[in-house]
Image (cartoon, rainbow, N blue to C red):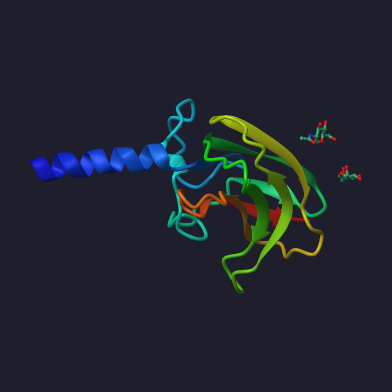
Length: 159
Ligand SMILES: *[C@@H]1O[C@H](CO)[C@@H](O)[C@H](O)[C@H]1NC(C)=O
Ligand SMILES: *[C@@H]1O[C@H](CO)[C@@H](O)[C@H](O)[C@H]1NC(C)=O
């Protein structure tokens, strides 16, 4: 009982210390709960590349050459003034290698937890017509936090 309690406390402490990332548009894989609260478990994915969330059905179609607004949430801030981090938005495939093409980079300006960042990206014209992932990362650059947080969204590219 004591052990369980101390593990729970340790988990809560870790939860509070971590920076978190959620991707709202396109919607991330799996659940996206409690976005109004800093420290949502659905925004705490640290395993490359997709936080161990399994691939799902494509949630939307995107056209080659299309402009699209990606929205992500800094669910929990872990900004360090001397070594500010950043967010990246990339596109990649789970077939044919692990290459991710960065479409946009957003600097972490120390905005508070729950800030939503939106950025316009252009879907590359040279993609094949099949499933891809829109990938977002929060690179914390904070030695007290995990180096990166990840989210993936499954999309279908069409002509
Ligand atoms: C996408 O945005 C770019 C940069 O703002 C613009 O030059 C281009 O015409 C837009 N493309 C489409 C298909 O709307
Ligand atoms: C994205 O593009 C749209 C359409 O051109 C524009 O209205 C909007 O302000 C842009 N958003 C950002 C975050 O740049």
